[in-house]
Image (cartoon, rainbow, N blue to C red; front, side, top):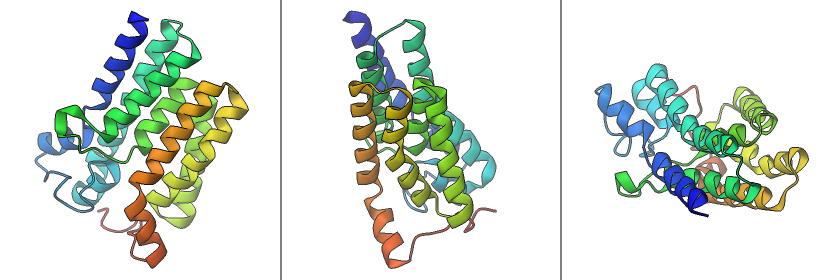
Length: 198
């Protein structure tokens, strides 16, 4: 129980490290919470800083979900603890204690959790994201569709109730965090991936 609690706390703290804010500070870019969509995530960093800082941010956000899950596997914890670890890392990204609880929308961190849980799950979710992004050119829509399908992939590859519950909560929170994007998609004002990415 002590090990599980420490792992979950550590996952939340790691998730609370905002890759976007740190990368922008180190590379002399504006605070992503004050520019573009005001979201500290890779897509907004792409808008305000270009591809290199966005790629670093994407990697950092993904590792926040991946590393705690891999540690859980190494320590041979059960599915319930893995679910707690994954959810803690994701919530840390959304509500980071180190940055005034103003975090990102969670797609990259969720994907890291899924790869860390079982790589075929992450691969399927990533494939859906890439397909939708290539065809429709909307990062937000890619994230929404891929994460909406993620519970099905979890159930397909690892049909365990606590893991499915984890993914359902992640998907629900992610949709909630994208509510402004959903409004923009409906009214036709959502920015495409090809906009402002030089």
